Image 1 (cartoon, helix red, strand yellow):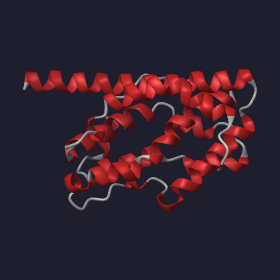
Image 2 (tube, helix red, strand yellow):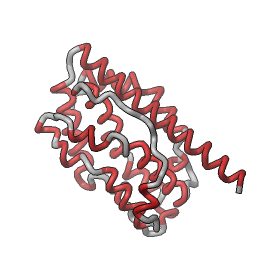
Image 3 (cartoon, rainbow, N blue to C red):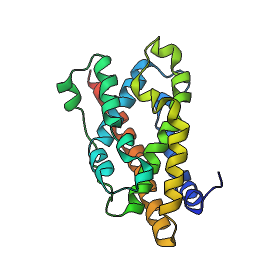
Length: 201
């Protein structure tokens, strides 16, 4: 597949933000533990909770298959529940105040680029955590399963077809960078809060 102008722009615009995010992901480091994974899930839940439904309930081109991409919050809740957390405990988890701009299709594509791109790394993350998870196969790490590659290609096709003017590309890039920055900041904030709590204990 030929790289579209918008994909090139998104990669360039988010390179710094993406790198900053990865620096705050303990779950992606060597020696990551089951606890690291559970903290990661809790934090992803807090970040997605405020906007996931609004994002996928918005207007999208049919070829994107938005309904099939919704529900990632439910995957996370399934994992937290299977790890022993009750529904009420999950509902009481800290939530981010991130309020992304969903007013334009281009902005929605930019934010979706962050979320859909995360699914590409689930297989590698699952392999890295294999020993720590000790036979547990979390739903979040399954992603779209065998359709991971197909769904990503479908996203890129829709992205290239609907975000192509300079103004649209700029809006998508701004939204994607804001998404990465928000998520990185949220992970950093939560890590600090856990460190403070550990000191009190």
